[in-house]
Image 1: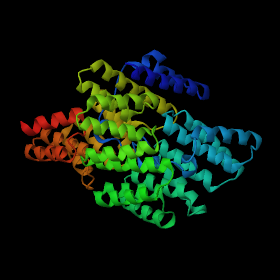
Image 2: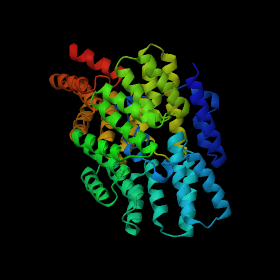
Image 3: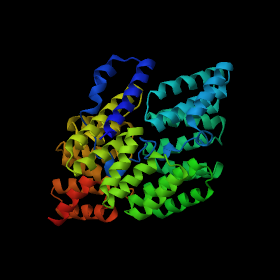
Image 4: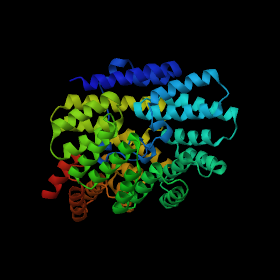
Length: 458
C-alpha cells in the first residue's frame, strides 16, 4: 500500500522547502527525521463533519477557499512562474507583488504546503512598501491572515482594503469569511448582503449560501448555490460550486445527490481534490468502502490535509487495519507541526484530531485556546467534545447545546450532543439527538455512526 508513503513524501518535500525558508530548531525537534512522518499520532472528529470551518480552505471545504477568479482560470504554478519572471524584470511593480502574494496563498491551499505562507507575506509586504495602502495587497493580506486562521487580522485588513475600494471582490469575500469564523453570524449575514449587492458572482454566492446554511436555511443555501452554478463558466468555478452542492447534499444524507454533484465537479476538473474527497465520503456512506479508500488514498497522496487523512484513517480502522490507520493519524500530527511553524493557527485541527485519536489533554488545551480566539459553532462543538473525552461532561453540555442552537444541520454536532447528554444522565434527550444524527446523515462517520446506532438500539 503506497498511499501513506506518498503522503509522507509530500510532507517531506514540504519540510525540505520549509528548512530553506526558515530553520526553526523547534520544528526539527517537533518533526524529527523524515522517517518518523509515517508513524505516530492524531486524527479525529474532523472526519465527522467534513470540516467546513475555515481550515481546509478546500474545504473541504470552507467557503473561504474560493480562489481568486484571475488565478482560478489558469495554471496556478505557471501563473506563479510568470509573475516571478515579470517581477525580476520589473521589481517595482506593486500590483504584481500583490498578485504573487495571493498566488502563494492559493498554492499553499492547493498543495497543502504551508511553507508558501512566508513567501506570500514577503510578497505582500513588498507590494505595500512600493505602494503603501494599496487595496490589492491589503486584500491579499486579509486572505493570508484567514488562511493562517488569524481571523481578527483578516477582518482588519479586509476593512482597510474596502475603505480604499468598497467593490473589491477579494476583500468583500474575506470580510464575510472572517466574520463567520469569528462567530459573528448576524454581521456575516449583513456582510454577505452587502457583497451580493456590490459584486454578485460565484465567490460571493457561495459565501452567501454558507451563511444561510449555518442558520439552518438549507433550502436557500441550495437555491443560491444552484444559481451560482448556472452562472459559472470557468471549469474551476463549476468544480467548486458543484462540490459545495455535493457537500450540502451529503450533510443532509442525500448520498446519490452528492455523487451527482461530485461527478459534475470532476467532469469540470478531474483533479479537483475536494470533489474527490467528497465522493469518497458519499461512497463510504453508501457502503462502498473499498472505492472510498481508493479515492482518499489518491487525495492524501497529493494533499495530506487533516480532514482527508482522518477520514482515511477511520475507514482503515473500521476495516480492522489499525496500523494503517495510525499512519494516517501520524501524518495529521506532522502536518499540524509544519503548519504551526509557518504561522498557521492549527489548534482546531489539533483539538478535533487528538480528541478521538490522540492526546486528550492536548485536545482540551487546543480547544480552549481556539475557543478563546473565535467563538463559532465549530469551535464550540470542538470544545464540547474535547471536554467530554477528558471526562468533563457537565462543563461540556452547555457548549454542545449551543453548538446546535443556530439551526446548523450537522450530524456530528448532534452525535456529540447525544453522547454528552448520555454521559450526564439525560438519557431520553441523548437517544433523541443520536437518532436525529442518524436520520440526518447516517453515514456521517464510520466509527461515530456505529456508536450512535448501538446507543439508540440499546
